[in-house]
Amino acid sequence: MIGAGMGAMAAAARLAVAGHRVTVFEREETYGGSVRSFERDGFRFDTGPGLLPLPAVYRDLFLKTGKQPLEDCVDLVQVDPAVRHLFADGTDVFVPNASRAGTVDAIEAALGGGTGERWARFLNRAREAWDRARRPLLEEPLWEDWRVLGERDPYPAVRKSGLLRKRPPTFAEAMRHELADPRLIALVESSVLAYGLDPRTAPASAAVLPYMEQAFGTWYVRGGIRELATAVYERCVQRRVQFAFGAEVVGIVEKDGRAAGVELADGSVHEAEFVVAGVDPQALTGHPLHDPRQDAVLDTARVRPGRFTVLLALSGAREDDAVHRTVVHAPDRKAELTALAGGFGPGVQPTVTVLRPGDPALVPDEEHESVVLTAVAHKVADAEEFADRMVTAAGQAVPGLRDRLLWREIRTHGPVPHPSLAGADARYLHPSNTTRLPGLHRVGGWAHPGGGLPHAGMSGALVAGLIVEGPDFRGSQ
Image (cartoon, rainbow, N blue to C red):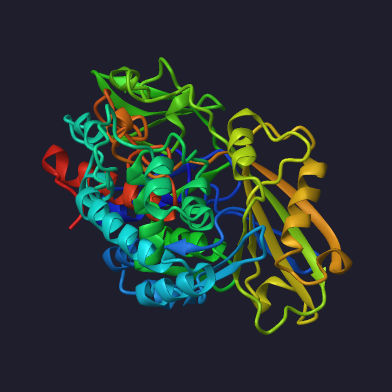
């Protein structure tokens, strides 16, 4: 196993239970991939994902790999309200957790003008897209006929009367026609933007992203999402998975036309019946992980924005009615989307997500607060100045923010892998879990079914199924 990310560990635990001896080689000194944390002066912060959607994926992992269920290993709690959306005109919407009727009422009360009913109709269409795409894009391997996923966008978009289209609408086009209110459009698009996707080019099937959150809820792990990574790692250790940290894999050993092991940076070679790689295949042209069959459709030149994170240590207690997550929307949506592709120059304000868990495990005492700000950005010229812009935006959600600020830490991350999406000529698919080299498999956010904690966990389930059951494996049940 190359890498100790969430997908790789999910595969390792399942393979170990199936009787395989598994060794994980990780070049860093810890596990979890992007699911990391930072600690200083008694404060603790998640530096990767801060919330868990679709926890059923990890419930299934713990059920299939041991007697202790997920809830016995981590303290999993629903976040309610799921999110507060704050717009430049001062309007805000408090979205309840996994409540369709409650969300319709909240949107109509805040935005008016029939927006609640338009949201309900959108959610019906998004559910249809989810029902059509769920198995091929989340629960099954990417089969040889994967191109059909590019030809068919499962989102049943409403077309204007008399309008003939030569192509399916993009997500932005569909939302502009169906939702009308710019604030409601921004609310829906924020789920797409969070993965670094441009709504103006993403397929309409991206509607499954806000649908997943609305249908299955938003969850938090007390102590931080890093605790989930620790629980998965400990489950692997319990199943006698071996971990080698500080061990960089530099090559894959081939023998008799199949993968036969890995070579480390220290020159050592480790033989294996199967090799599973949790790495970004885009940087591996010419390598066995690179699949030339997909070059025609995988848009390798597409800009891939990264995640910009600011960790804030604050004095003063969190107010009792504070919301766990607030999305502070950019005042100029068009300027933000332009900057997403070309770079954030001075004066362009990003959409900022403010996480205020209110978790005693994250602070030195009850008179302090730990806050995480995130934005999706590309080519930030001045990190400190960009962080200032984010803090200014967050001040709308955190009372007295600047006066309470003790210190801040800036973290920049590479491109954000998005979940696989149908449509758009398959440009939003990820490479399959199998490769052109027998015995070599891909896992994690840069492989099918794509990025995000649930999708990474499912990639582990798919790879384990392909190895244990062979090419006849038809997907998770």
